[in-house]
Image (cartoon, rainbow, N blue to C red; front, side, top):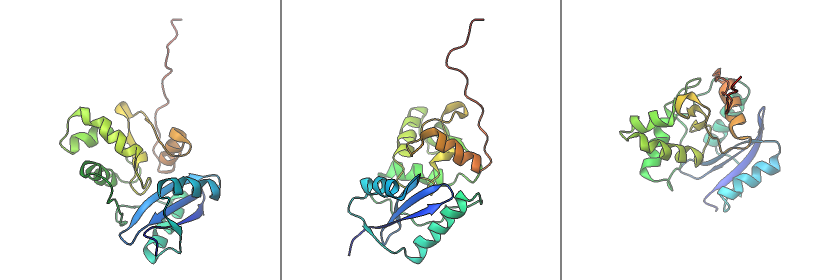
Length: 184
């Protein structure tokens, strides 16, 4: 029997994918426009995974994801994850991110400070968010750059997808200032 199983499913936001082990969810793929694209992206990260029928717990997670993309306020903080291949600092960062509730945001620097690290560790927080194996379940879209700027987002659609997810939660970000100001 394969150690990892996966399935692809449709939501109001597009096609998502989820991979799991006996220990919990190991990978979540945010929506793309097609089941094929989602499956390809998911299998790049868990190439040994085989298609499978979700367990009751995994199906509950899928149902929550569908409700989330339908606009319902959903809390993913109790979902069992399998983060066995992550180092301790990244696990601490992910635990801090999981405490950020629906409709709330924080910054990379704030998470670093919360973990007792200096501002130089904000970059590490950003790296952890970029490598987040279960985006949405660990809500990296709620972590912003300094000054409340959107920052990066490594999911399909980039920062536009991040902004849409935040808007779904009622978070309105200030419009970005132009990079260059006119003298006149």
